[in-house]
Image 1 (cartoon, rainbow, N blue to C red):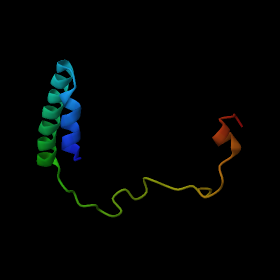
Image 2 (cartoon, rainbow, N blue to C red; image 1 turned 135 degrees about the vertical axis):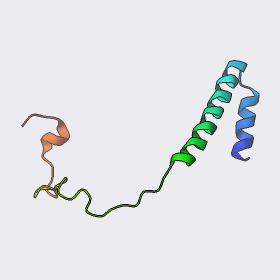
Image 3 (cartoon, one colour; image 1 turned 120 degrees about the vertical axis):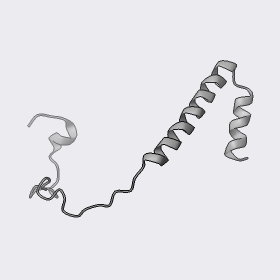
Length: 74
């Protein structure tokens, strides 16, 4: 059974108020989908644009203390 067939089967036994909410949701998603394809722009990445804004500590690969995992104060 396809996804479409499964949805139709489920909707066949759904009460009218739920069907109205589902219909509203479907329309909203279709509208948003159309908007997203219109405004989605592929922006090329620029290497080094944030150089110096992030750093990794010297102890990055060190094990975390038990207090990190247990939530205890040191």
